[in-house]
Image (tube, rainbow over all chains, first blue to last red; front, side, top):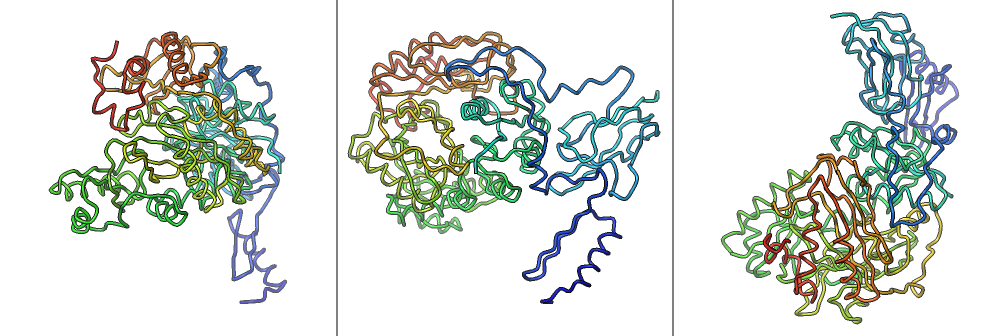
Length: 172
Length: 452
């Protein structure tokens, strides 16, 4: 297959559009096609170079650096950035990120989110996806209860152990 | 291309060292941490810290996917791997390249060539670098037995994928060759998933001397002289110094020229180290291996050359030409580095993790401490035991030794055991003062009774 007609391309686009997949790469000899769906709010992270450039700047406010290499000032024991957003209100439990990656609330961009605020979840129920270098991993709730807050932004990077959503747990 | 934000895929003192170099160059630094390092000094100094995964290194610092995903997600345009962990992993370099992130280090091809010790040995020979009498791939115990006649004894069986002393066996008796072959290949298979062995003549009474090189990736190589790392225990370096007290000018320049030829041959990019074994009796040296990363002991070179090697790495990764020319490299004085590890020299260097309850560092002219520790730091049991590097400079070796004694006496650490008493005892040894130690000296001559 050396020539790819406009009709062929249209057919490929239709196929991916109707499929449950977000992204497709097709390579035929020297022809390479890379198709990616971008629905509202669903922006897969991790493969777009242009996107990483426009990310918000790294957290500012660094401690004043020392004047020489020979001395290490004793730092104040402030909580690290990674732990800052960790607080979970009393009476609630958090579904935490099992790994660092991009968090998605729905199985595909066309489908509704796994859970919404107010939904009741069961232990073992899928509540989200985390993508790490194009591999998708499901996030499950360990608890039974009502979802009261979804903290992680759809498509955004979550750190390992970061609270993704809060659940009002039911007494077991 | 100029860099803006650097992801640091490491921990401990080297993470702090790289963060400082980034800030000195006006670059932002993002540090990936495990859950055990969330409150580390590096996490506090970095512009941002992100949690890569749990404490176990395989799920955090050794995960290429987590590290690259974190670098992309935080908008970094470069990644510094430090030493250890993923520093010499070609798949990390490729993952960075595929995602538009500049890897602060050599190409994947250089890492692969030098990571395979047999390939590296052949490259060295082709570049006219002296190598030890040795073999190609030794596939069977029978082939190993044949080598006893060919090379003579003692010889050393080495894992081609090896490093850190694993997959290595010294053979002194002809009857030991089979069991050495079996255990070395099994260890190599377990450690590196590759049981390929080769053999080299083993030198008794040798010193370890290495040359620091820096390359621009276009074939231009500058060397920054040598480091002598002969004080080792089980292939782990404990003390390093520059220049080597065992080399004369003729050997020094011959060794440096050899290292430059090898680096030129692979168009080496960034900072690297060519390691040699030096035989002080015969006054000759042979290629051991090339390390394609910044080394733990790089500060002794910085102290005598006045060059910031980590800053140089970052500039090269950003596409800048080398800021050093060979004629401009001048060494001044003598520098010694002591590795302060959380290990108990009274108990066979057993690891000593725990909470540091007191931490006072020596200060003054000619003294530098690279560390991530302070009073209250918890030393987790999951990682290597390096707490700090004490680097002492003097206008001569004797003056550096004298200053080292005072600096070690002033270094107070409580809560965990450290190698400070070992270093204090070492400074009293005439073999060390007279530069007569070999790489086996600690194992053969050092006694716990020598400790204060």
